[in-house]
Image (cartoon, rainbow, N blue to C red):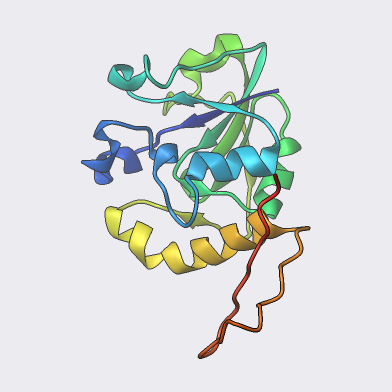
Length: 179
């Protein structure tokens, strides 16, 4: 399956950050939104963005594609729902298109407002989305925490050595670099 992260209307609100990159390449937390999607999906993604950015961030097409809103921060429930989409099905919440599965030849009509070719499935769980630059800061603490959990899942932390003293509350995680 070919996964494509698309820019929605929030791209304009996120200027000037999106002058040189798609929305999905904005860092929130430890890693970018794209890196979050790729880690949870287990595949590389491409971008559907402004023409001026398409040379640096090319679109990779295939027979079938799942278009994913690049301003949405993924979670496991969302990933599960997206993987179950069938051809011509959209995952939405209100007027936000979260994802849409299409055949490659339908790419030109995938976002036509009057197009009613797509079956709409409502996603009723909470999710995070960045719409404005201040969202990056207001949601950053949770994003850092979630990224840390994801990045360290299945890894064992090293013990704090006796020569070190921990002052205050909170976790300290130390990882031994493998050679």
